Length: 109
Image (cartoon, rainbow, N blue to C red; front, side, top):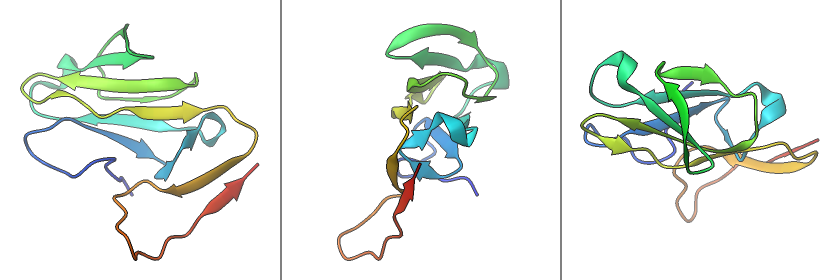
């Protein structure tokens, strides 16, 4: 399922990643979804902290590694999602983790 990278709130823009692991890796066919208030076509995307030229849609499959953010009217800029193209990664679930939680790690190559 979908998993927010920061606590869900009606007042903030969320950038969701599927599959829900971080760091996300390009070879996992990562889908990013921007959630926030406003009209569907009003999403502005940023890649590597620069305006990326995509204006809408709310969702797309990532084809390049980098850092991604989205902006929605009324709720602002999302947290950053990093997409890596590394050969070997140690992943954790893309959810808020608290001290004492039991966590499954994935070592992927």
